[in-house]
Length: 323
Ligand SMILES: Cc1cc2nc3c(=O)[nH]c(=O)nc-3n(C[C@H](O)[C@H](O)[C@H](O)COP(=O)(O)O)c2cc1C
Image: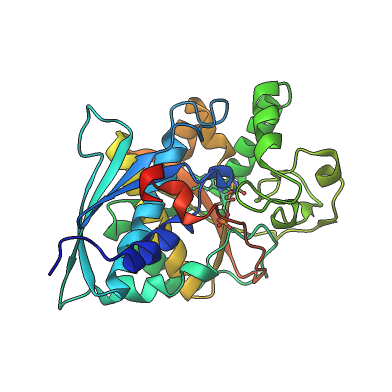
């Protein structure tokens, strides 16, 4: 057997990888394929210097793409072995995935691969029903399988999160760098990256709300509004440490949680704005009552709106001579 992955398999693997969530849909990853190894790199031309100066969100996004790649490999009859941030002297190399045929494919990854096309960030209100305990437990296990923790917040802690959201919004009012960066990536019609106006969902009729209003453009600021659920289901995804490899692992955990939620008919959106300030991020982590580092604040629900976002063609993510 040739050591080289067949081109049609590479297409399937990378199409799955790029369907992953990324902050502002920047798709901040690129891939190099050699023999049966796929290296996942950060794309330094797709940074968010104002909102993600350390690159943590980029690494989380690339970790999610790496998880999708592993799921797609399982559907093609491959097993995967991977190292996260394997060479500290090469900080842009976030993951090295070794892909080899196996008679013993991971059935859970195969099952989750089927959910990749249906997973979308859903910023609409949920119905009033709280998630059942078995689903909460399943999502908690999904995070744990990738080395992260998912902590469900109690009602009082959710109020505290909403206060932190308010705090963040006040800090952002006069931050022109952030609003300029966001309006570059968010709003309007978008055919290859960024968040289109159609994916913003409605504005909340009450404030603060358990949804992040990403709209910055004038037309998006006056879009329709509605009431969001009074008792949202919110969880925090954290890891014990905060090194680059931990952030990539957090991304894999995020995607495993989101695909598991999609399979259970559960939608998800994010209110990460407090995590973009170190002091507020520490306050969020304290709510989990565990040491560690918060990476995502996730609102789960039961909305079934399917407003997707576009992706660039797979060839854009490969070195030019390979595309
Ligand atoms: C690290 C990270 C941070 C994100 N932060 C937010 C956020 O604070 N608010 C939000 O509405 N969406 C957030 N998103 C979701 C992205 O906007 C979304 O994944 C992207 O637009 C692609 O859309 P999709 O998830 O529907 O495929 C985040 C995603 C990632 C990976």
